[in-house]
Image 1 (cartoon, rainbow over the protein chains, first blue to last red):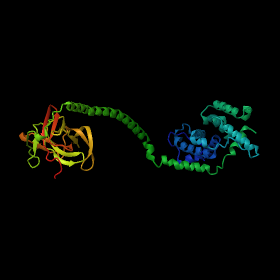
Image 2: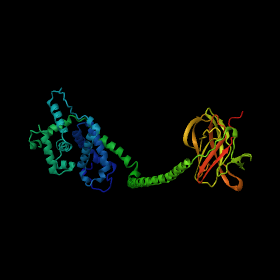
Image 3: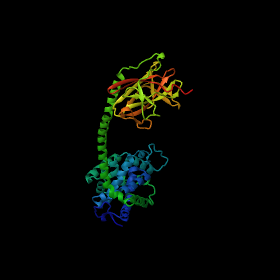
Image 4: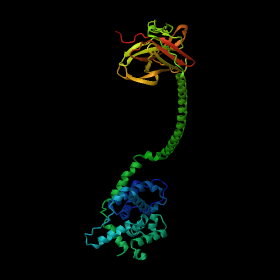
Length: 178
Length: 271
């Protein structure tokens, strides 16, 4: 399979054939979905966001200056789709998986902790939530997080610190970032 | 447990099965893709041209709005100017005093001087008045509970310009003549129904715009003595019940005011 790094820059509006673009897109779907899931907390909404991002990617891939950065660029598109999805009216009806009054019928502590954590992440702002999802859930290095968010590595790290501080106020940031 | 592990667990437990999702999304993207590229390839090529055309259309619309507004203003000025003049002219004509005679019933109907108008009827149609407007006798048309209606031909010189105002009354009873139909004008004095049951409004004046003479078979162009050509105008008049139908008309126009008395060929339906 052709790797992202193998994609050569092109000035053509549509530098890829259909098959090539599909091959490039496939490995991006899963991280895109996981990012959207972490942002929207709803599997169906996440898949829709990735679907929209894929179409946008096809239309705009020719405008990429550095097509070797397809992955962070695509994830950035997904993040924008998630932001738009939350802004849309229907987004208020999206099941975030975080009931306001959590009925604890399960004795499994993990379930409760997971719900609490998702609720805490949902309360973060878009940029904070994005860096948390990219760094902790997609396991991206800070440099790639920075590439997706369009910030410098230092700015991405700083935002990550602030987001972790909001999620786990009592936990040392460096410990959380391990 | 680390924050990273907690986050993984928190989201993994709400993630549904993603089996087939990748191919589903890729296939959908490929299906949608030709719609904008292969299925309508011309749309991509024409996008730039269409954008430029759209700009031109917007500019043309803006210019059109501006020019249209100016044209509308000019047209409005053009239309209103004569209308305003006409209103003023009409008001001036209406301001002229009436000189309609009134006769005693025993005097009969002393009509104005008349002459044969060639080219009308069987050659025995008389025209009354010294001009420039010449009146024919009023011809019975219909009757209603209110009164009787008739029509009358008027001869107006072909070369006359401007408005001609007509008013009239029964010279014996003094009842005011009403005008109905096409050339009726002025204040509405009443309402009636014609022979077809259609509501008609009764006006106290008739107005002839000689700049725009009627162009129909009921308004032929005729020649009278001396070869002067006239346009015929057919007006419709009415008088309430009890009228004698000896009718006096006063016509006021540019530079003239004349009065003539015409008879009626019948004041009611044939017995």
